[in-house]
Length: 311
Image (cartoon, rainbow, N blue to C red; front, side, top):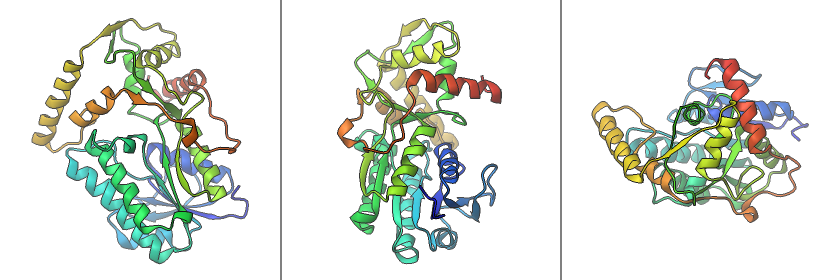
């Protein structure tokens, strides 16, 4: 895969999934050209284009001559819906437009989210679906791949670190009723599967998941997060109203401060949504890239957090 030194142009290379993508591409023999606001990457052997999603000249240099363009840049938290639209939708549209003119033969891979399946839940989910729509309008179907990863975890991730910290508490709050299904995947496995799909130049829309696409309950996830740290969590169930109130309070604070927040009312609706499972029929086949299971994935993640001094 990538043995002919095919050129992959990557946005979001310094982000959580992006770091894993660059590593997987380089390991598979690809030549990588990455967009970076700082003009540098703290890892890997990739060519760097300094710029961001609002810099059309930088985006043009990024995609020029690329065999595959992987759009992994985006934001998962923002102060308001306009910020999600500006980065996740307008940024994708700008990149797509430049791909059609500067790299018209390139295979375009949009890293979306399982949240795009439910665009009415939140501004984030709506922005991911809108980005898919932008790509589908501009890119020929045979050259377009849309990938919807589930909730990701793994090395370098600060967002799911909170989950592992919650599992260490004397009493762990449980904001679910036990009927929810949440698909998960280690980011390294998601990256490996995306690289395999890129090598195959496979068009279509694919969902990703680990060895259990039907997903897990939140209790199971928190229990395994605790077990990976040698702990056995004790739970206290909190009503959904408590989480909704927290989301409203965080939203008010964001409006006053202009700062991005994760626990918005929209994020609360995502958390309380019962079905984040993945239909196996929507998953890619015959990739020969097997994902690790939850127990191994969490154990490896905890080991990395501890080595990094995060836990």
